[in-house]
Length: 640
Ligand SMILES: Nc1ncnc2c1ncn2[C@@H]1O[C@H](COP(=O)(O)OP(=O)(O)OP(=O)(O)O)[C@@H](O)[C@H]1O
Figure: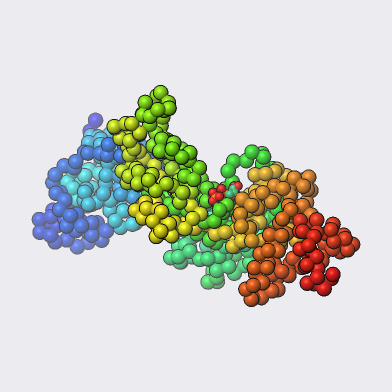
């Protein structure tokens, strides 16, 4: 079937064609015929040596390479597909194709068919085809990527003659950290072009961007805002994710544009004049009422607020509430209410789909494994396996077979049919190398080779197998020191350390209530109260075992309290001794004492003594302190 539609732009098509030919022959631009974006792109196409009169190559990526790309961009694809189908329904006619590309201009997914094949080979709008401007000359996708803005290229504006029968509209899609993720493009037969197409593509690209943002950031508070009330809930609204205390955890591109800022502000108060508490109060009174705010520049803003369950609960004495969850709740989510954790999560999001190895460092029990799981679950490889290897716990002698697998009959005692190694099991997903500092030196060289070549040869095998996986490793050792003393290979260290994320110890974290809430949610349903003085002791404790230790303490307290409020007397034995020890250390370094562990412990000791009417043994028992230590403290206080 051939196109017979009337072309409303024939005259301008001729003008453009004339200007293009003059540019190609004489290198001079006829003024006022094409816009500056097209003119710049023509010049780049000429400079790149594109032959305007040669038909385009029809080569596409092979299936494996395309699948790799698709898995890298899984988040974008998942969020974009429903929007693309809706867009296609709106513009549907036989002469248009909607395509989603990656940031290099390679089509990941396309919808629509395809009477366009009358005009050009089918391959050029199929997944795996690249529209990079350097290869194809001026075209909407490639030029939008170079210019980082929406671009329409109609008919003869295309640099290559073969594309003159098309009109293309492409809009860049940016990720949550404002990095280019890809483009959304509609290609029409030029004769069937419609005025409003670019607007529709812009709107859809914005919806996709918003979906990706929401998929990446789900904080305790989400503020939807705009300077015009009608735009709340639209594709153009600003979206700010906040902690309960008002720290800004993330903001979308619209939000930044509405605020006229190029960098994200730090907190709610640097955006709006009203205190966050006022907003929360209004929300409490009527969760659905629109909110009126004042920007710090004095202008009005309108907003609605989403509050994740329980963030309105009182977080003081009796306040760590949690929704009824089954006791077998899945792995806890990382909280991001501590600024250092929020920063780590942001960095992780930036690199996780870029094939950059992540090295997680931190003391024992700080949540390294949980972070690795969180990264995997939010990555493009989330539907693939997460294979964790504890390098410290691998059985000596079998370690090599465990990691690399073996072929049938590779060694005495090997299973008849051979076995797939852990590394191979990670194909399509993430390999998590826990306690990497304990990997024996001899195996480090082999691991390095696997990581460099991304292929594996099982023991006793001769053929290597290609693998695709992301690598996260973790350690509580100082790897750089191990490198210096020669017990860890320098080349492996650099191979693993694409980016290093260091989790802070619990005593330095600012989100203790959120962590407690997480633990309680995993341990129990219902409502649990914690007395303020217990929380205060928690805040002062040195927590050498970090969150794992806190978890154990809470478990014990839950058991001892029988479901009632958690009080000082439910603290496990040894808790106060550990606190007291760290106080002794603290005393060695001169510094302010008000509110110090010392002061708090004294207060607690006095209260316990009062409570037990002077009975030292009972009071010491309540605090989990030895009688001697309790007595020494009373003496120091002049009470004994
Ligand atoms: N943000 C958090 N909220 C609640 N619990 C957490 C959090 N982070 C970690 N935990 C819990 O703390 C414990 C220790 O976490 P994890 O095993 O991830 O630490 P790790 O740093 O890998 O420890 P190690 O160095 O000993 O291997 C686990 O029970 C985990 O569920």
